[in-house]
Image (cartoon, rainbow, N blue to C red; front, side, top):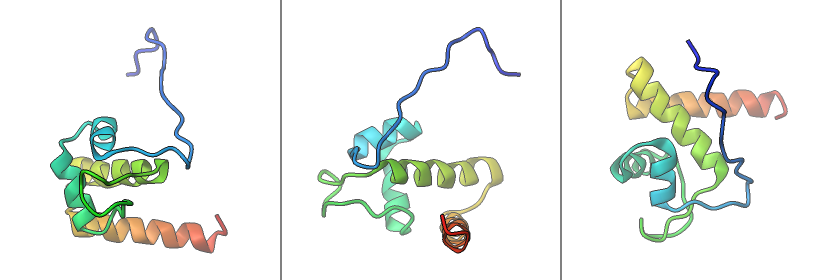
Length: 97
């Protein structure tokens, strides 16, 4: 059941907004190592060459949250999450989105 007594809060991330590895880790409530694993699997492709220089967009945040949710709630491994995201991207592309 949702507790409606607490006000909702959040931040809308524009596509131009950039997040560091630490920012993305905090936003996903995981350790940086989990984000690094998503990058290693090809689920996320940050700008920058080293983890300390990486920058992510709001789109990366959405992809990371979906991949982590697939892992957490459905027990999908990283390769399976990567495949699911590829299929979701293809569906979106075919629908003209």
